[in-house]
Length: 296
Image (cartoon, rainbow, N blue to C red; front, side, top):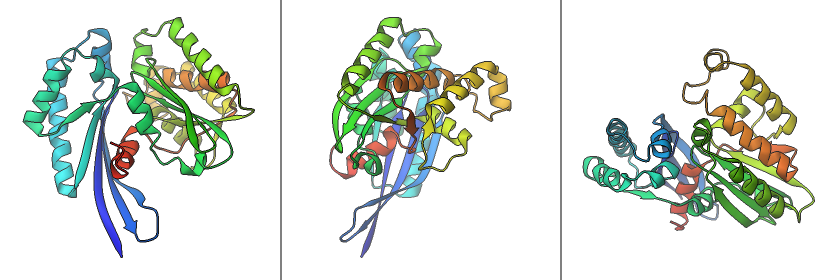
């Protein structure tokens, strides 16, 4: 007997907002299967205001409300039975976040939880990493967002260390990450990876997904440090307009992809990882699984 459930996750990030609708297939004696049914991404760069001015503008609040109304309707049409909405770095730092949450609850009837970096890292780690972490290898998992980057070390199939740093693509674009933060990340990565002979990286986030797509590799094949580095040089050699026209990048991806690549490159360098796997997962996938398994 097969049972089908529909869950949804809303991820309110610093660079974009996403709605993921997932079909969960339950069959007796088998592990639940999670199949993506729909993913909608809205490019509202909340971090641009939250990190520089400290609050989100009326214009972007209106856009958020409209997006949430649309998400609510889409969930209704898909007959979603359970959902959770989580907001990260930009909303954490916006001084008018309480007002925004109340307005969205009133206008769109969606309750949003603002989560801290530690919870964000643990939810992302709930994503489907079984094919990687259930091996005898050690992995450094890196999720690059607009406002922060989450790092987790997996060894022997378990998380042994996890940390969130205020170093994200939107912050970097606005020159808001000083050398002290980079030094802290370097020190943390070197310390947690030191006991292990060999580290392989796992990357998530829209930018590494795009780099992977450009490589035209099969999903289970990793990208090399050499490839990531050559892409970094190539991206830097192109103008913003060329990145859109020649590489087919979205306008809100064409600028943040460079600082994101820099974060992945540094993480590879400091951990000694020569390869990075890109399993196409993120916070929204983690939210669905954490909901299903009763972790949130």
